[in-house]
Length: 497
Image (cartoon, rainbow, N blue to C red; front, top):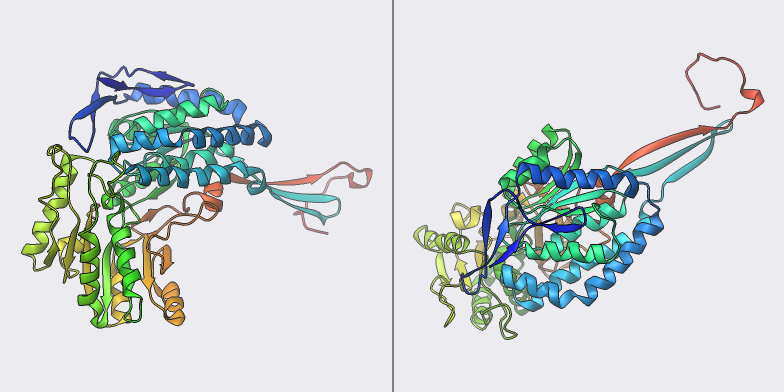
């Protein structure tokens, strides 16, 4: 059986902890590999390699850093089908979706290639007689990334390209559920010429996470995952003196006003709710239908959902694949029965779905719940599966109040033809990322990604300009060169004159 170790100091190393976890093929349910789970000592070895590499990488030229990243981009483009196949094999998403994930990760690599422009400082000359003041940005040192299973390529690439472009060294702790992609990303970085130790991968579980949060040489931690773990990572990290950006869960709402193009809204709802089997933090999981449009809109969504082809991700005919694990599949299915018991109308029930010949796969069909209320578990919890809840509201104001009352504030969308209503929504909704007739408003790489409320812990969003600020510290340099006229002692407080 394939065994997956770690990447430390520029090479693959076998685990020594004696602990291993299973890696499954979600389409068949069979174990396809085993991954070593790092011990505290193995995490320490990765951090030590990063710390040693920082001594030179942190002082390397911007030209050297960007030359590595430009070569890395070319290698990612050349190997994107291979990387997508690794994602499909261990996560389950269809190949086209995996290719899209790689493409969005590539955006951040391309942004990182422009780091000389993003790191430009400021200079004020003659702020006082013969005195200049400059503001510059410097790397923070060894930084860590803890990433989720649902985007094993994209989310790490939201972090490490900018981090290493800024002069930091990096330790990645990917999800132990689909670890092969991270290892391949590391191999390609080495092929691109990245010095040994600048990028390291430790596979593992809570033991590895806690050690990264506690380790005194790790200066910053980026995290993406569920809200409870994001809160834990944030509090434990700052307790140990680190800067932390911890992106949590979501319950993304799509508000559909009566004037909206209902066919476009239905297309968007199906695409955004069921893409990647709903295992996206930006998935639309709650649709708020305003006024008398709900019956017609639900019928249109059902009509489209019933035509979606579900199957293994490596089958070109498949439009949606399985869920990541059997345990997660069963948890998601439990919400469907619970919603029925709590009074929701189950318009489509995917809990009995299976694929012929792959009955042990982690399958769940598309599920559509209507007449869901905020008191129901299916509405209150982040389901993270192919389940769309439809909530009915009498007015725009009631719909916005529903969204703003949610504990999460990751992404949202409004569908309308009314520019005034859309502008009002942009300003009034308490959510970090807003789409206007765009169901999944993930920002392009040169902006920044991040939610509000329980969807983000910490002050910085991820990637873009905010990512650069997170991975650097400000420094102000005040300069005066000697001049005979400056001789003499002056104990007064310095002033500008």
